[in-house]
Image (cartoon, rainbow, N blue to C red):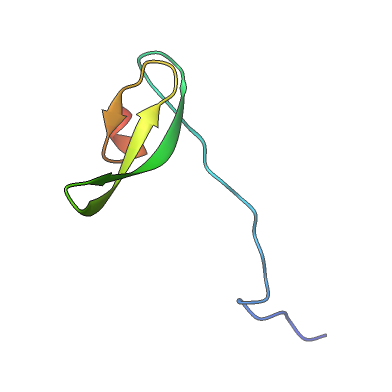
Length: 57
């Protein structure tokens, strides 16, 4: 039996990040500042902003 190509395989895994200080969920947001698009990670509970979710550790 033939194998499915790597492009035909689908995976539906998403990674959730949690803030180490308060335990709130971290969401990615897109901001438009000074004519530039900026992606930031924000904790929903304590409203802390970082560049990426891994910076919360």
